[in-house]
Length: 524
Image (cartoon, rainbow, N blue to C red; front, side, top):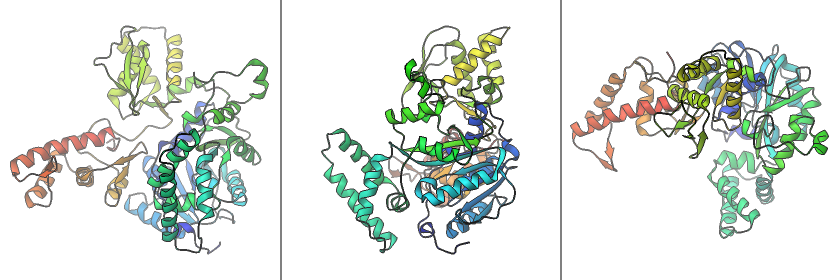
């Protein structure tokens, strides 16, 4: 194995967790399209390009009986990942320092393979090595996924990338290169301050986004000479060359297919011969609604996914919904329209009685997931509907599927570990209790980043399953009385102990509720 150092040794790349990077999405998507992927509970899972290991460690906590191996070319990041795994209570995760372009000695095959942040940031030679390695070690019914910068959506950033590379000085220190790049980005921002043309406005928005990103992003994305964009059709063809079949994307919003989305209309009949595969629609719509990043999912060539989603599989999946009814109580027994709020500050109108009942139940159980068959039964009981249920069950699955692309109803093949109750002895994952010591956010059990405030930073370490809510308050009250903890209201530090204790008690209650709502509390 090569002993060359990696650019990531000196500048770690720490990205935020997102649900689309979780192996759950691979298994769920494969099942929805008629495949029978391996059971996640006991799966062997490989991550290529694991970075600091945060994502794979979080998944290992979710799937304690699965086997995980994570590989990265950066020796320093692998060292950091091993230390984090020990402190986060996931010592069973194995990490390997290795170069994917050289022979890696790994035992057996893997049921799921994740490769994020590598394919579009390296050479064609290593891209072929990645696909060849996936083909070699993927189990017969296994599923794998690749992330990459996608064209034409990445084209705006590609212009910024080219400009920064032109004026880069690779022999300078990383710190100086990053400083120079930020200076050029700031100059571009100032130049485009009065932008009015469409391209100028898009460029200005992208420059501003880049300026807000980390130094690691500047170095590894914008100053990386190998960073480039790829068209979805090219990635599908490249994967097919290694006998891998395209299933879809881990982010359903990117899957523009008539079978999934009502806003995607079939093309005129005379053109349908050119749209024989669902992926042809995605390739076509990428030009209408450009995606800058994709995370494409593949199976082996001999495990061909169905063209249409298999709706009845939803009854065996676990469902959640972030939608919040804006009417209380929800009128489920009539056909009136009810507005449900989304996490994106807009609303969804729902009129169907069965769907209103299902969304009401999912809201009450948030963030816990409910099995599809159980949700159907609870919804039917809420409406007082008696059998036969065959047609109603089919209607129920169709209603659920309409909400899949926008993720207003989420599907999981494996139950989540988060709790809908605070419980007697609230418990947060050991990973989150480790993260709270060193950073401004923690990873939730929904694989999302939750920004923490100072009170969260105090509460989370005490949520170890050994302290009750009252005990958490009493421990923090001691800190308040000793002066180690300050309580502020409207920017002013309170001097009165009684007033401070009252606010602290309310703060602890609110803080625990926020942890519950964010899916940080673990089920007993």
